Length: 526
Ligand code: NAI
Picture 1: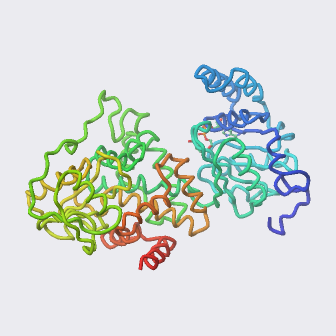
Picture 2 (picture 1 turned 90 degrees about the horizontal axis):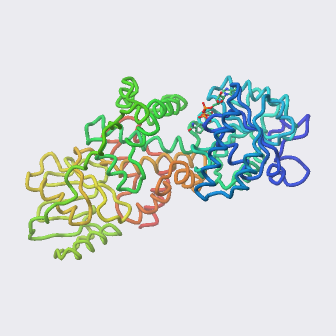
Picture 3 (picture 1 turned 120 degrees about the vertical axis):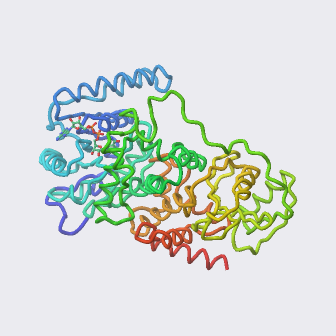
């Protein structure tokens, strides 16, 4: 707390002098303002954790309707055996729809989940501050507004903290606990503990555009949209490649699910909030879908036709013949990937030699090269060259992008995917774009996470937890970085530098945080 903010009134929970602040909040009555999707979910979670919850909405009848819907939700949970009937009854009974904000008076915590507008939220917070007890903590579930800006007109801005839940609240484990410039660290710590007590994984975040998840996740959509703009492949192929990397949904199907209007609005908000930093630039491809009303599942059509009965089949790659016999096969490079390639050749009965000094990783088949992408296009690397995408997990049969040089012979274009298939992948041909799909997407996610940590937005652990739990990524960015390094191939930093040289502009600018990590890794490797 800054010295100018020391209380004329006793300070809110977290800085109080009596009892443990966390314990105090754990017993507190909670007021949830806004009984929409998020507010109802928050009320449910708080009630299940034992709190008495008052639920208020400005729209008449909305809180009562939400209460009725929660009753149905509890019934379903009981029917599925996930909750005992008495527990469900008791939790529902603890939630009370209320007609006015006066109920805030005896609450230790107020969580607002109203419309995402700065002016409306500020007005509500001012109203609340006049009603609540001096120790009451005010929390906002805003997904994009600055906590510092929301707190501007409060008499006690130190009591305001972001408590950013994810949708659907009862299922999603993550809560970002967001501190503005004037948030009391004690208040943030108390809310952090409370979220953990509610069965969530809390992560601290500094209030910056997109906080953690909505910031770090931008490249997951942006790289695919950029590839679509370059006509690198169809949405179907790009989705398959990223699912192959372990993501539950590819970016195109995920954007179709979220709704392109919503996804575009978040991207635009992060872009604007970063003073139009090109790294966050929205995509013309998505804008066209939005303008055309092709919003995804909710409108029946986005990248995919959701009215169509059967999903499209993947293009060839699943079942390829063995490659033609070669005079000489060498495994180039050293490290986990080279070992894996050698083991796959061995298992397939292909005689091969090793070239650990090659300076790149992949296979040399007579005069032709099949190289792991280092961020350069195959055409830049030579004529009889094909590049293949990053595979950080050892999942047999996973889709894997590859691309031949523009000067590769027809024979090598035919043989390269057969070698990839023999090595255990389902090759998907792309246009010769540098960094292919997974390599460039993961490098950008790692870069954004490194930047967030570099700027003090969150810790490495926080970034990893946030991405695994907030958007269900198969691993966190720093976990990927470790696995990537274990492959013994080019660092993500080198890949991004190559993309930066290729595309020019700010998009692939390496974060100072990632650059420093690469320097240190290089020193250790010497
Ligand atoms: P929603 O539209 O489902 O619900 C908002 C509710 O707030 C409505 O019932 C509305 O009547 C009520 N409301 C509006 N102004 C009010 C006021 N001045 N006082 C009291 N009630 C008022 O919206 P949703 O999706 O639940 O979002 C609420 C908040 O949560 C927003 O700040 C949003 O950015 C944030 N959020 C939303 C997520 C999502 O996936 N929907 C995820 C994370 C955060």
